[in-house]
Amino acid sequence: MRAEDGKLRDTDVADTEQLLRLIQSVPSPKAEPFKQWLAKVGYERMQEIADPEQSLDRAREHWKQLGRSDKWIQQRMSGQDTRNKLTDYWKDHGVEKPEEFALLTNIIHQEWTGLTVRQHKDLKDLKSQNLRDHMSEAELIFTALAELSTRQIAESEQAKGVPANAKAGKKGGAVARNARKELESKTGKSVVTGENFLPPGKSKKQIKSGEDE
Image (cartoon, rainbow, N blue to C red; front, side):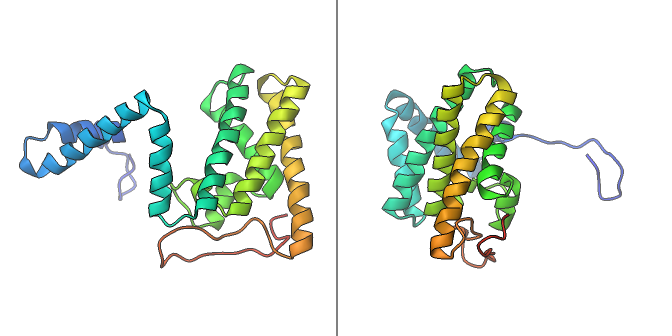
């Protein structure tokens, strides 16, 4: 990796899984709380495998603890179901690589918002956070509309492979874009917003209607 002096030097690195394995192997009482946490998480994961509904309950409880409203949580979970149906279609019709899923997702997102996923995250001051977890209720609804429209168009056109599904994605995103513009013309407010659920102290950007074009 590049060091502060600009030269490339051998550096010890580890991903998350490797770090957790290292914690498990540390022979120190100070590591015991982490080991207990890992055991708890592992047990909860086993419960979710046996009863998938528990994962939904935990997600709902987690969002409540973060201050999300019941209406927001319902929309977030409904939108995820719509997303899963779209990605299932892609998997069954020639979309295989993670970068292909990311490409198609970005096409849909940019078509309805006027922003790439990265630009939308920058607008909300997000780094590694999940964009959907920081969307407003309206943004979640229009994202779901774009993805629902994309899947139904892809099904009707029997889209296979990345190019065909990309075309369906642009059409599906356009459906949501037109609906967004119609709503914004009636309310005078932008659907795409810099508002987020970051802790207090973070700056929050906002854009006016039409600035995302």
